[in-house]
Image (tube, rainbow, N blue to C red; front, side, top):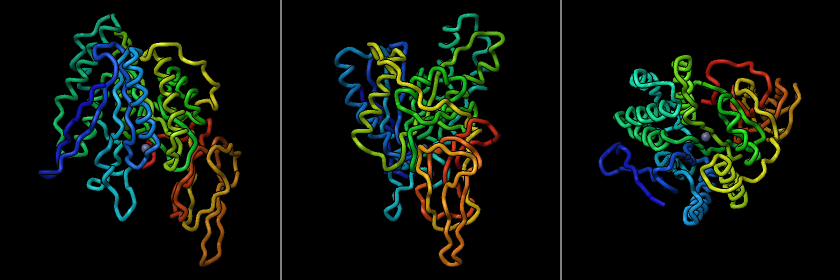
Length: 372
Ligand SMILES: [Zn+2]
């Protein structure tokens, strides 16, 4: 195992933070995987999964079982880890800029496309090498001007050569689910099976330039630009894995998720051996544009009628919102049928707030598809 520390731009002198990366397996290997945890800093189940992975990958490396290089970043957001205000961790948004930590990763596909256009030919493997090298140069040439941008760029540089990128998150109260693209789904489906995902939400471009999409969109855009003239493979498949809810930090669950990821990397050919038989897919993949964010039109005390993992029919009661002053009780129903995969942790709802998410089978939304 190699341990590297990457300095972030310090906002003021004397306060530098670092991203720590751990590298397992042969550096010159053709196949590469990248795994990071807790980009939203208070989403910690994935960090425990990463810690379990660290032990297992060291054992596999010592046993000569790693066929590819696996990079692990267990603490992907040191800025956010320190954002504890009045005993509350606030790890989703950067307090200085108010930006979501998992948005606005750089898109270098236009620049890379311009650079490689004259170098592409009929050999897909050649094109893959040329594009990856150009992507690395483009990211290396970026000069971040804030600590947040420096953090994003450091993560993007560490992951940009990987064939598979796993970004480990969690929701508030949720069952296991994941986000990826329709183009990558066939290759991601084994991960959904091993991890027991109850929902797999697919979108090519959800509009936020999140970490997974800064890789999947990059390759998709190059395919769209050059696909009719040159063979361009899907250079990276990228997945955001949601390891249930924020309180679901347990050794039992983390060890199981760690094993699921090892099984997937074995299936993918980064780890030697035969991957275990694929379990059944718990639910078919559905479009991210089919997700209903169930919202409340009024504020008040939120009392749920359902828990994550339940299948909803159109018009099912999700919760009641109670105004203890007027005694009005507002029932909140879903209008989409499907699996309720996540609900809010807050119990005082504010008017307009999304209180739960239901994965519907039919796409009906367009434009920006993510939470703020
Ligand atoms: Zn997250």
